[in-house]
Amino acid sequence: MESWLIVTLVTVGYLLVSLLVGVFAGRRASSSTAGYVVADREFGFVIMYFVMGASIFSAFAFLGGPGWAYSRGAAAFYILSYGIVGLAPWYFYGPRVAALGRKYGYVTQADLFAHRFQSPALSVLMAIISLVCFLPYLILQMEGAGYVFDVVTEGRVPPAAGAAIAYGVVLIYVYYSGVMGVGWTNTFQGIFMMALAWGLGLYLPYQLYGGVGPMFEALSQSVPEMLTAPGLDADGLLWTWGGYSSSIAISVFGFSLWPHYFMKIYAARDERTLKRTVVWYPTFMIFLLPIMFIGFAGILRFPGVEPADAILPTIVTSLDLPSIVVGLFCAGALAASMSTGDALVHAAGTILVNDLYKVWFKPDLDDASERRLIRFLVIVIAGVAYYFAVFSSFSLVYLLLFSYGFLNQFLPLLVAAFFWPRATRPGVLAGLIVGCATVIIWTRFPELQWQRIHPGIWGLGANFIAMVSVSLATEPMDDEHVREFVVT
Image (cartoon, one colour):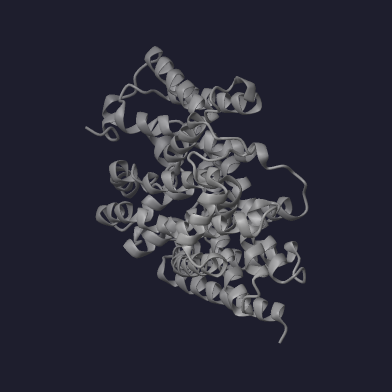
């Protein structure tokens, strides 16, 4: 049997298992919107651990992570730096969010903030910002899935077909099972990714250098600059400590505020489950180490690979590995893509209906109609992302640059909601608008930047100043209402 056919069969086998896991998982949830969106608030520790871990390890982890190590050296460790502590804020505010979610029936991030500040406009604004942040990442997951299919089948399965196959499976289980399907498939995909990452991450350096230690010894002698912090920036220049540290900071601030992450707080069974997830979560980051080993392994043995993100498939397809191993690599890369894409498309459909459509157009939407509309929009959103991923030359650069900067503008909202009773509706709206505008200006005019500090940091500063100034200049909110939220 030809090699490419074995690779394809292994990949299809993985997709079929994912489909079965995702579809059958839906039987565990009720037919209500709460069942579809937050799994009836019954996620246990194991599912929470893997849904949080697998959701963040996207196609970027399997392709971009090695690409960073290959092209930028020590700069790649920035990913570990923010990932290890990124979920820590949940330990402090997560139980409060979960308790309020149970009390008031919240299912999205904007539900909480719009209620706290009694502002439908805030719900709509947050929905728009969330979708702007989601879209480029969902497109990248589809592009990654298509690219992997194309490479390992030697062009016999083109990117458009590969992305359609992988995300056809995602759509089926997300459509039928909602977040329960996302949770159980992420558990399966997370275990699969971790096993494959360690297998390849130790095997490939052994094949090329005789082990991980000899590999780094060779790098330290030939290209010591690649092992010197903070590494290189995207332009191949030495990354400034200001740029490096601000990138870590902005990622830490925004990590736990991703809307599809935040929504999982409502799905946790209880406070203990939530806190255990936060405490154990850094162990999932160990998954990134072997992935980076692969990128470092390519520096000396495979020079000049373009784009850098192709280094992992380049190594895998160049070493005459058994076809089944190549097929498992393909499946692992698809697992990384799908475990993020399913959470994004599910959250995007929910946010569009709950935070925008219900608020702006039809507040009296009944539960059954809401669930049907979310399912419909899951398909529509996936279709739009697929179009941009396959048929459009639309550049994602600006959206990607804006995403974390925009996302971090939710941080002042969080601080104000739980820790500052004097915050007002006009204040948080002004802060959010000013913060996002600052991110846009600083991103589009890089000559304004100092030490290449991330634009999101400047946006946060402007956001806090505007929020505090406007809040102090406007009437305080009802004290009894505020006490429901503020931590004392």
